[in-house]
Image 1 (cartoon, rainbow, N blue to C red):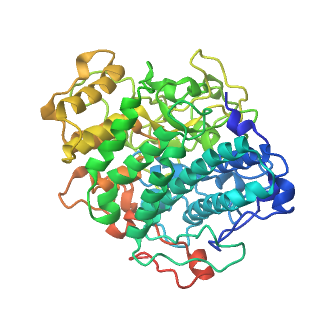
Image 2 (cartoon, rainbow, N blue to C red):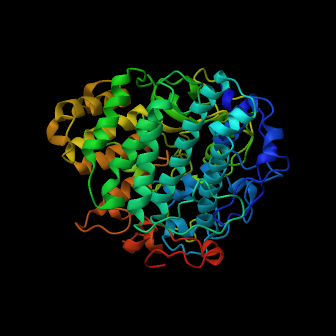
Length: 534
């Protein structure tokens, strides 16, 4: 079931906004008291906030966008997030020349980049919706509207989930933009744009950490809420991610803290690896026992040209037959760089089932400039609109695949990394065992098993690529490993084709470890401090 996305939305609380003003709240065409006359309205509003990660607006798939200033199909949260996290790395290139999109892979983006701006706007649109929900669900307002104790208890959990979703967006903002503004929950609509916090990234980090810890007890236990809603395990994963990257954000490593929350997920006993790796990416991946938190899509009920529709269609082109992937056509956009391809096979030389490449008519190299030929670079049909039984999804244009934002395989990889980096609360033997579970699934037997001697940071950044490629983790991973722009150690992993706008690739300026504060945001609030180098 994909119940949470199928619930009708409260359209009166959603605005069409170009979020250059950071304190944009969803507008209302009716008073809140009229909208919330029925208790079900609270869950409907909650559904809209979850759907904000997936869809582009109120009409779907187009015609009534949440944000302006960019094509609606391009504007969705997940499509923008994926492009920022993947096209800037050694994993993916795109053939399209839309606006400033090519600058992502070339590492030449500026503060005027419309895709950077759209990502920034999406983050704050989500935060604004969350703030409005929280303003409308205080104890006083629930009581004044005559809600029962049962409704109040349900809304208490909804509020915890909304604060989780707000923290998720703040984490995305911290990770991609660094020192970002914090919008006070109490700010009424129309107040002036907020400034960045006094202590910069330290304050943003502290806000996310405190928010998640504060609502942990009110979240549903793992596996007890509807599929697509966040529970304690999703919250633990977000905390583990925050701590895993803490040295980047704050200068202080928190691998022990990361292990604390990774262990909570593992010890919950709710999650297990899917038998087949690709089951995590198919049209019925909602059945995977591995997925901890997903962004839900449905070809009939959640139609958008972004999200998984983008990932499935843009991965198909050239001589690929779209119908073989459950689609009515390919968009001929996304391909892999040779760096991703070269991760397979690894030093064992054994066949790895995770290497999902289409090579017929495709070259491994990407020699041409601009990089607009789909046939240059292997295609990657990792996400396909087919079920585990081989049946097509419910709609050949809009796909049924859900986006696996957090899954157990990542927990195992994070556990191993935290151990290697010296965190307490884990041990090397257990870490090797977790890695070998992933590799036994990939190789079908123990052929690819590693020993403790193999468990190094170089191995782990490669293994994260083999297991998690095209899932929106790579930019964050490369920054954490010191490989996204420059490498102090001269690690060749910091070089990939066309990085730095040269065919062979080169290191780029370290300031690009974060994106610029968009120029439009600074126009709206000139007091915002631009990130160094932009």
